[in-house]
Length: 226
Image (cartoon, rainbow, N blue to C red):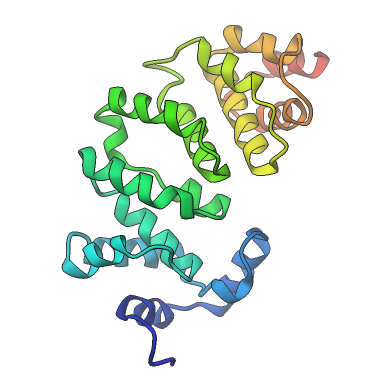
């Protein structure tokens, strides 16, 4: 093994699964396969928990960007354990370095459920970021935390108005509307039937909704006719 590797990189290579590397490489075309070690997610989560709050982890979170995809996922899991301003500072430092959908979607801080006021304020900034995956992260946060308590009718209005040509942003907007339809059917249905969504987002959102087990067959029939 390369002697120039950091202690964390050496440990990640010790967890390498070649078959999983091949699998991940196919799923994440935006990351070159040389940057994927191949550490399975449960092993990565276990390692994150074993080093969280340690000097090793604290120093690791300060050093950006990382070379390996697996390091970015480890970073995401470590950030998810933070709270308060420390969490938001760490997110602002890390998000601009996220370069793929999988790392972006792995970043799910527990603290967001505790302080939705602070989260809402940061989402407003992130939605207007120049960086693709920062915006994707913001849209996902709206989907995960503001479709029930804290829902604002202006949220779907704003997202439907986004004119993006980025596939991974379009897909997250589609996911938001599919999930929103399942949670708030009567309010969100017009976005599908009018329609108020742009192609190809409408097509992706409709398919996701039809694949969902949360809608009744009657609701899906209405969606198919739209």
